[in-house]
Amino acid sequence: MPVPSFVVRGHAARSWGLALAALAGASLVGCGGGDSYEPTAPVTTVVDYFPIVTNAESGALMRRGETVLNGARLQYGDTWMYQWINKTAGTGYYSTHYLSALDRTSQLYTHTVTFSDSRPYEVRNFGSRNQSVATSFDNTRCQFSPQDRSPFPRRPYAVGSTWSYVWTETCLNGTVATTVDKTISGRVAALETISLGLLGQVGVALGGSTQRNFQTARYTATRTETERTVGTWTYSDTCWHDLAQDRTVKCDTTASFVPAGQTVATQTYEQEQRLAFVREVRTPSPVLVTDGPSTVAQYAGRWDFKLVGSGGTVTCSNMAVSLTGNVTGNCVRVVTTLVTRPDPNNPPAGVITVPVVTTTAFTASGFIDRRSITTQSPGAAAVTRWIDAINIVADSNPNDLSMTGEMLSPIASEGTWIGQTTAGGAQLEGTFAARHL
Image 1: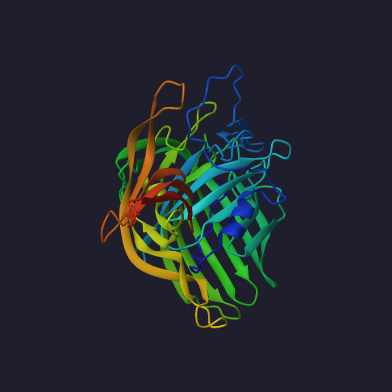
Image 2: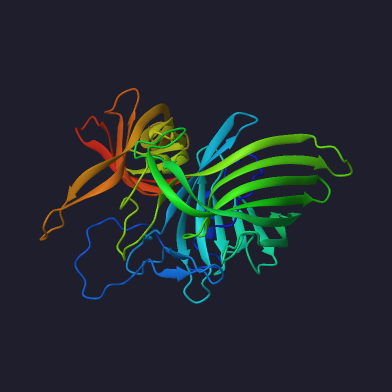
């Protein structure tokens, strides 16, 4: 994948609308619903929802997700995570990427990036040569020009080979446009094997539990990013580029910022980026997000839960999921009841029925874990499979609210809930849908 920017954006809330519209492909890619996790009947014709796409420039082979036409959900392609550490400030975060869409005709593809902190997720569009086309987040959309190649060393990865690239990034937020001029010049220093510790299922805040070797091209590069009226960031990188999958697996960076019109840097820091988890699709559909390696850390970040059903509406907005799968946050239940009251326009015996809204706030907590479930459709045999499950209950009393469901992707979850028992003996129940903010 193209080298992600090392500039840390400000945190902001986002609406689902723009992000999901961008994920739906806008004018760049075709996209569909979510991950199908019901048992599927045997089919005579195998449809590969994860076509192998050959990078036109590097020759790397990767699996892309693709629209499922007979359902409301997507199948998902490769998923991977980066750990980012600002060594100067002593802070860090994780970003999770998954390949979510492919347009067969144009070969443009999309991957979605979520963050373990409060940043809103991004939808990034790439071309068949792995070059950046556009990025969308919040109400902002950024276009890249030109789009002729991505800023990476290219095959045959000869030691000593050099390359350079010049492009611009133009972002539009409402009616406000900004342009950043970017450059990169690099040199391949060596071809070598690098071993990284990857996260396990239970998630690890720092470090990893599974070692994996990658055949890489180590390169050095100097990058600049200049916003004309603000100033220039300069980055000195030493990176290891995975030859097989055409993505960076590790980078050590020194960054400095010089304000416009000045010559002395006012900000400097050192940062490390390293691959923390990877799940690669290697089989035809149907493939679920939990097939193969999984880690609860890929769901880390802020989530919004919306519950519907009997007994009113519950919203659990801004729920936090940790790198170890713990879930905490605040919920609000809104119940509307009809109450009979005297009619002021028809005294003394007239009555009217008016709606009364009752709002109750409470906290909830829970966890995400890998577990086995068994389902059975009418007339069919029972099917047992593994899922990444989510469980959340009200802290005051689990009988007030209990939610159970499945993580469909790093940005989506759904399931069912049960709640209080009414005076008539009926138990409140319904469904929920959740999205990464």
